[in-house]
Structure formats: C-alpha cells, structure tokens
Length: 261
Picture 1: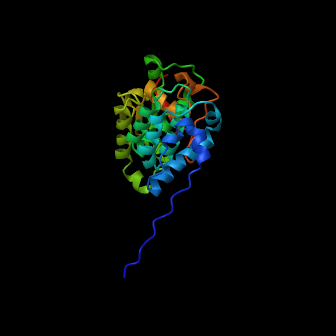
Picture 2: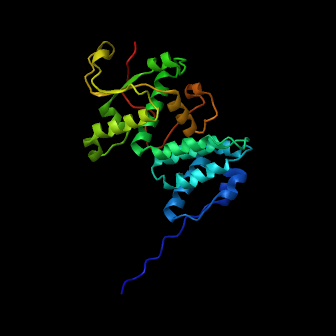
Picture 3: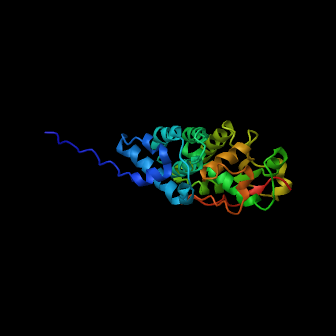
C-alpha cells in the first residue's frame, strides 16, 4: 500500500503588509501559487518591508502590471541576490503616477539574468561606488573610461562566494557572467580577460589574471532600481545616503585596481 503524502502548507501572507507595499494594486495580488512560489513572493515582500519601510509608508501604489511581474517573475526567484533586487525594484516602483511602470522592464531583466550575472553586477557596481565615490565623476563616455577597473579573478571568485566546484570552473563562470552583463549593456562591451599587459605601468608588476571592464549608465540604473532608488539621478550612486548592501556578500571586491592613472 502506497501512503499518501500531504502537500506542504502554504506560507501565510500578511495581507496588511501587501496592502502597505502594493497600495490599491493589492487587489490584483493572486495567492493561487504553489507553496514554493508563494514563499518566494513572501520573501520579496518581507525584504521590501525590511529594507525600504520608509518608502512603502509614503503615499502611492505599485502599478498593477508590476504586481503581475512580482507573481510571474518574482515567484521563481529563490537566490538571495534576486530576492533583494526584486524587493528594491518593488520599492522603486511605488509612485503617485499610475502609468509609471518602468519597473516592469527592470524586473524582467533581473529574471533574465543568472544568479552569477546578478552577483557580478552587484559586486562590480558596489566596487565602483566604493572606488570612485570621491572623484565626482559623471557617467559620460570619458568618465566611464576613467572608471575602468581590473578585477583579479581569484578575489572576484572569493567575493562571489564560490564553492570548490565553482572555483574549479571560475573562468567559465566569469566569462558567462561578464559576457552576459555586456550583452544586456550592464557593463561596456569592450571588456576582456587575461593579464593587463598594456596597463602594466599602472599595475606595478601585478601578475594575477583577471577581468577588465567599465560601467555603463544602464548598469548604474539597474543598480539604483535594485536598491529602492530608481527615481534618483544616476550620480546618486555616489551619494553618501545611498548604502547598497546584500547580507552575506562583501561591499566590494578586494584588491581591485584602476586601469587609468
């Protein structure tokens, strides 16, 4: 006789929290999901409330189509970086303009990125913020070139929290991550791997292999959206009030070097 297995209980969703975060669009929220997908949505909503409580207390609402993105894309997000990114995009999407649904494209982009690409995006831009916050750079062509950085592969892998198996294929994973970010215009397409031969005058004999890349405006925009600042100007990346953090990941990749004097 085969014994039946009871399905797991569905997570309890706090309706008051949903109303606070989604505003009047809470009526579009559908709880008819599998327990795992509902749990992922619950984690996004809890993270939104935890990190962006002041934002969600302000007047406004989440556009109804953004609720659909939360259910369709967010419910499949089980990586902690994806959870944080969706939470920030939800917070950034809360507004008084009913038709301002820019967050939908950001949510779809996050859904299209792998966990390695998302982590790389976070680490690259948090590192750029740390390295250049006192330089007063703007994200025009020349300044983006000045913000080009060299990421030693070893320290990139450590910052990514790669385990032994992942570290054994770090070059493949790094190529997948960096190429994917470039394909989505989240870093400049003119990146490359290896030893920074033509930059030796700045690296002073540094002989690690690594990645050389530079930021893009769109890469910064996603970063701002992912931390509840989607409506800020792009230079807000360097503002002292902007403090992007993801629990368990470092705020920058160590031993990153400039490629410009």
